[in-house]
Length: 121
Image 1 (cartoon, one colour):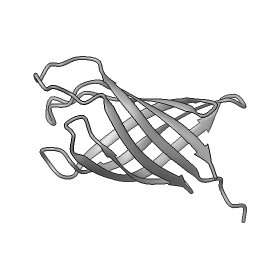
Image 2 (spheres, rainbow, N blue to C red):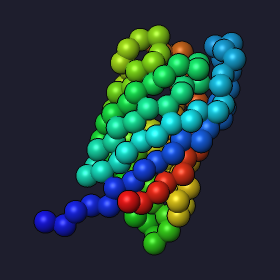
Image 3 (tube, rainbow, N blue to C red):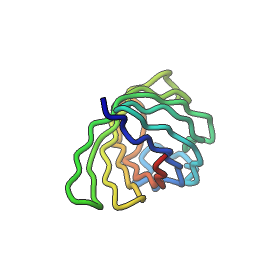
């Protein structure tokens, strides 16, 4: 059985693409996620300044030696309703990741881009 490379993913920040709900969003969202064997678990300071803990599964496809696409699907805490489901497609270029969190009127969340740095270990 071949062991999969694990990743340490460092959350850098976010960019909210709208402000439909009138919130003063925090765009600096430091956090750490461990990704290993198609699972992820981590924590970060969310856009409301609260601690969020998340966990889920990863689906990923390598397009070229330097580009991957994938999605995280799971649950996250730290918001008005706990926990809430999340779906976050992303694209990796080398060690840089840009993710997209779809907005949701049910959870009063905005369309958001996320920015992260990946470290293999």
